[in-house]
Image (cartoon, rainbow, N blue to C red; front, side, top):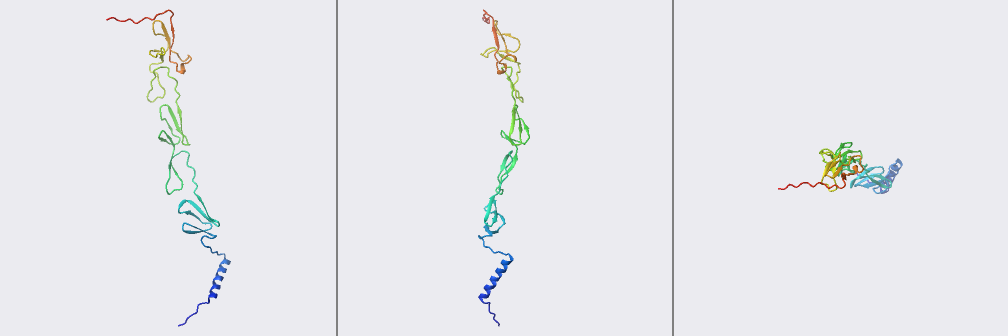
Length: 222
C-alpha cells in the first residue's frame, strides 16, 4: 500500500489565490447577498438589472440596482367617465369597469340611448355617463278645471276655455261672448289678448248696471 502525502498548506493557498486572480482577469466577479451587485427579497437573491414583484404585495414591482431595490406600485389607468359598475378582484392591482352607461332614478341606460322617464321628460344618456333631460314647458291651460290624460304631459281643457265669475270661485262661465250672470251683472272671461291671461288670470271681468237690483229667485210655497 502506497500512501500519498497531501500538498503542503502553503501550496494550496497559492492555488486558490491563482484561481481568483485568473477569474478576475477573465471578468468574473464574486458578490455576497446584501453587498453591492445583489438584492435580497422574497427569500431570493437578485442581481443588478433583474426585475421582480414583491410576494407581500403583487402590485409592487422592483428593480435591483447597484444602490439597492427600487420599487414602485403598479399605476392604474383611469376608469371611463361613464363607468357605473366598478369591481375590485383580489388578484388584480387595479379596479375593473364592468358596466358603462347612465343611471337615472335607479334605472341603467346605455350610452347614446334616448329614453322618456315620464310624459314630460325626454332624456339622452351622454358619453360622459350623465343623463341630460329636456322637460316640457306647458302653457297655463285656458280653463279652471284642466284634466291630465295618461301619456300626455300638458293638461287639457275638456270643457273648453272658461273662468270663474269672481274670487269666490263658486261659479264658472265659458269663455267667449259676455254672459249675464244675474239680471244686473254681465261678465266675460279673459282671452289670449287680455293682459294677465298667461299669468293665470282666471277671473272674469264684469260690469254691473247702475241702479239695478238683481232679481231674487222666486221661492215656491208648499
